[in-house]
Image (tube, rainbow, N blue to C red; front, side):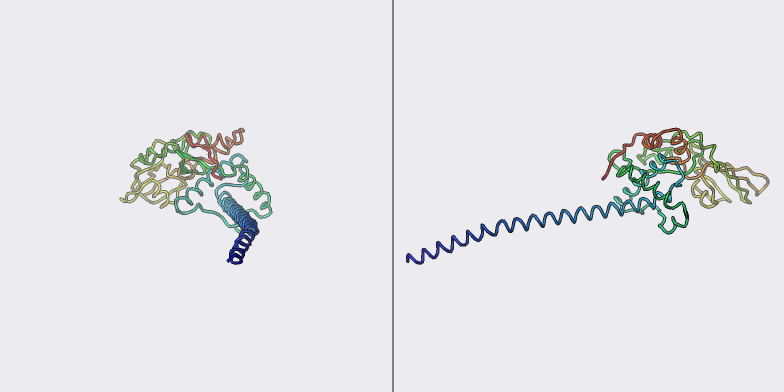
Length: 280
């Protein structure tokens, strides 16, 4: 009986000793596993960030000329990042972008310089997006306004986009492509315009169109146009600006940058009431 108790005690002590020896080993393995998972997580996050930066580069390169002023390109980077994040969050179509091959063909010998300029702007605005009430905004932009940008809530009262309220862009009238003229054998009647002068309702040959629909149908640079009848069935269309007219005018943004305004002031001018928030 005594031997059995002694053997039992020895077994218990050996078990305890074994556990005491194994616990540090288990803790070491567990800690190493956690460190490995953290390392892999960091690697994955770094890879995702690099992938996002590459995508953003191809988007920005499509949206603005690399010859634009540095602060103007930075503003476009924030706009592109905002629209990219909003699309990813809502599952909608991502902003259009160019491939590296297309950019190499476009820029030729200027590729390295243009690439460096845009990537530097992306880095210097790293993670910055425009938000309104803690949500990504619709960061609209266009090439040249007709002298004033448009008020979104004037056309769509329920849009909840007070930051697209319309601002003055008088220098846009100096842009090379501010005015364009088209002659057509058509009958067009303008029925309604918004406060910025953009056509919102028109008829062509008896069919109703919105201004943007007619712009697309005729290949006009913008929906801010006037129609003059030269003779029955023959008209002249004079168009002002280039693009839909909402949000940032790239030409005015360029002029602001040339006068020393930084990208934050440029964005605040075109998107009043929004906040510049870092999402990374």
